[in-house]
Length: 336
Length: 280
Image 1 (cartoon, each protein chain N blue to C red):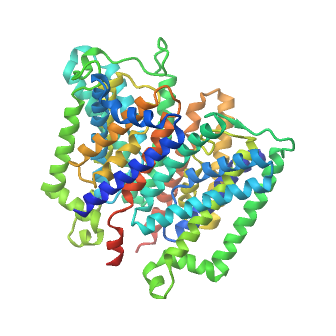
Image 2 (image 1 turned 90 degrees about the horizontal axis):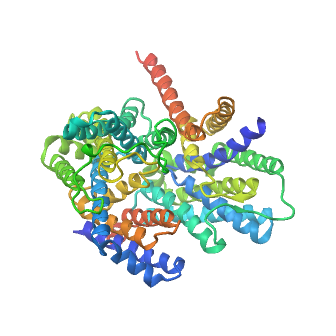
Image 3 (image 1 turned 90 degrees about the vertical axis):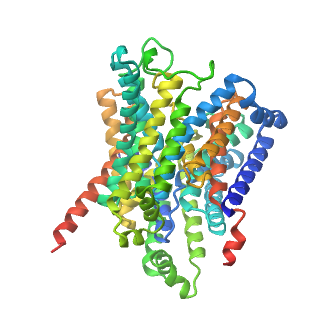
């Protein structure tokens, strides 16, 4: 119960901070806050886009919970999403159109594998050489983001378009739309399945149990003969796979191509969502809804302003900060 | 060549010394990147207002020091995870500088300094190099020769023993965080003042490289120098190569990250092989 109170207190603190910030920064605070809250529900288009953002956030967040539950920190989400998205787009351009739905599945599988592989490298390096996964995943992702930038803007660039992006994948591979004209597709379905199956694995199956034991108390896990190697590498693989899936789904359902910089903060948001959800993959769904609401709200409220990216980052920071600080339960805890 | 290597390496080294102090105190500050940005922005603001280098450097050192100690205190008091709050601060601070830049200077782009008597980049580099040398020697002396240094290391080595002996590891760690903020601030101030401008993303990953330098330098103070030197030489070589082979710039922006990653990997591999030999 206390955890929910903590989360509620944290979200209230974050909301207060956001309102304060907008009051200081916006020329018309009431209007901005109003459109931030109402914006996503204004019409089918914005509502659908909010759900589309939510789908991606669910997958990123659900994946991140697995690392966190094992006591691991994957900071490489940005690079994993970006590389997987590019891999998906490239496969989509290479495959013959006739493969249809099988092609779509193949794109998703390869993208997922790319994400898993990148994060898995950090997991392996942690296990084998004890290189801190936080540092190695961030560095690898930092290098990959620029490398993918280079691939998109140079050798793979669609020279007919104005955007820095690859060519668009054929219609046959795109996911079916749910709420046209918005970006919502059956990606939402994949998102809910991912969250549910990870929650089932984590709380109902032996592997998930062992992983949680390993995360809470590694020496006890060792005593119980829980393989150290498996639960250092596997959680990183799962998190990376989810980021990879998220990246390919963004390509398959929203932009149909790898566009320069399309990941814009999803790696960080995955961490925020997982923490709001208290590292429970099922609670990731409402957490992702909240964050998607906020993100879409900021985008509508600040449309046309170059500040929306900085603003999102500031708000992301405030949310992360207030979530990890246990504002409500602190006094009792320190008295213990 | 010496100039470019020092100009690239010194800001990393300063921030890395700060990060190292927090690392040995038992709690690592991963918000170096954001703190450098704050230092750079504060230096711009104070320099633009007062045209005094001394004031600019002082303010740029104090503001991030306060922020750093402040977020560490919040994390301790409210039982947060220092990595998560550090990450939050890293997202928060650069965004905040951009918002403040628009609010105060009505520009989200390059803010250039127009003062009459600006020091040349070379003079400034000499000044910051001397400061860094003093910081390095002082840090070395304090860590290995004084009681304060012993306490700092003790807090990181065994927190429980430290508490039993009657000390407060929290106070030690707070001091380390304040110092790391201070050094990041100096590093950021140098970046702004030598460029004669504040640019969005002026630190461009230097805070992260500073963190990596701690690991690459084997968690030793002298190791930081080698790591910073390694980054600078690699960056210099990459820049030369870019000029020679006419490669696109985006390919080289990721180079520092890649080379650091590979450096960590190769070093860990050698160390593990050495340990394998030692085993009977």
